[in-house]
Length: 160
Image (cartoon, rainbow, N blue to C red; front, side, top):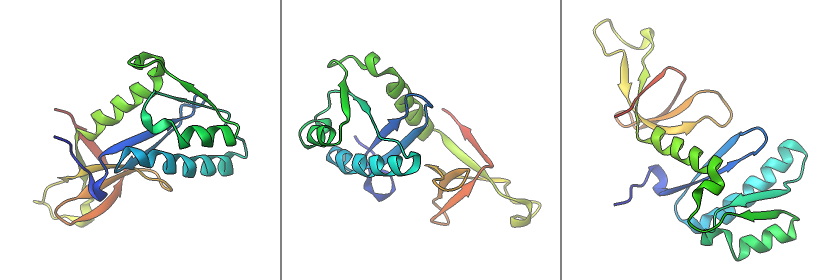
């Protein structure tokens, strides 16, 4: 059984800068969306840094072949593919994916500020982890009771 998050995404793709280890994570509905997401990421990262992307390391997934390969070549990007069924060749990405999956499976409780609760109310509420803020610090959480996104740094994660 596969699980979808809000918006119907069933997969995620990570891009990791090998030098700084900065991570970008994108939720996608289907694996064929990786190509479009990468094109957006590529344009964004070159705009931000003023530098060109020189190399990308991928597994041997079908989503990185075909039009993706043509895009690499036309933009002067070298592709390094790991050997089939050897995730240890792409260890940094595999470990980050594991960390993300472990974080998704935890139960976050967000702190409710004193001015938003009475003395006998709960001090925190259970939410669903959505990710990290793009333009601001903190976590993005879904409050299923209020049906809205909450941004907060006051979060405790409980792992099973």
